[in-house]
Length: 299
Image (cartoon, rainbow, N blue to C red; front, side, top):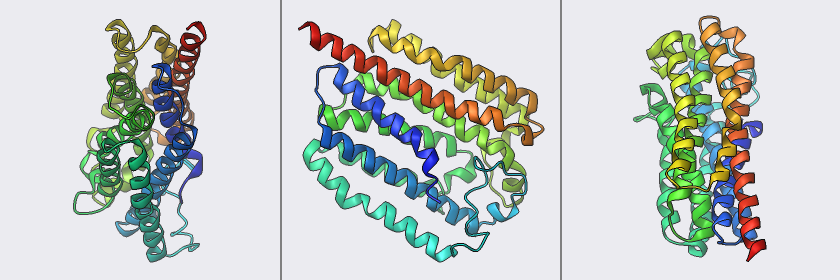
């Protein structure tokens, strides 16, 4: 139910933030970096379990007959009788609440600004699924997810740098848009079931063609923003390696446009979407790490 295979995007976001700080000569605090990755992944896992709990309560997972395993439709462990709904709710609470004392310890080491990022992340993890806000049901899920992963990049950099900085904020924006694309395309196979139980996700509101258009716009905006930020001299020029993900995003957008009305054929597009987001973040992280090493080697 924690969906460990999907935690890779959180690891990618953490590596990008850590590399952003290292590229500016802030060094590498290895214990703090490891704690950052662990806490971010626990937060993501807790949000996944909480989402399964609320999608069981609202009937979305039970009604979902067109899911594309393992990408959409939840873990379905509740529906299969492996775990109970109350047990799932308790585990979600444990995963999220354990972040409070551990996050406070990391903030004591890194700085008070981390408290704001952590509090915002916990709020999004709860508000995404849980009533009364249930952002995923109001067409705000993609925005919430983008904000959360932007915060992961900024927070991972902050832990190393001990202050907020424009470079991780800029680079985190492009990655956040590609993470939003993951949620957007995953909503297409789930849209019929979501509509039946009153979940008004963006895929439900926009329909297949509208969702495909928004996906293409977000993917292009993510890469255009990266190029623009380099032109504005915000990150170093090596950040352009992040554009390696553009062909994957364009291929996924084309497949989504072609098969949006037949969600059962979207598995390759979803895989490309996940690969694009991870490649984008990892290429940026590797380029920034190399840039930082090269600068230090020449000093």
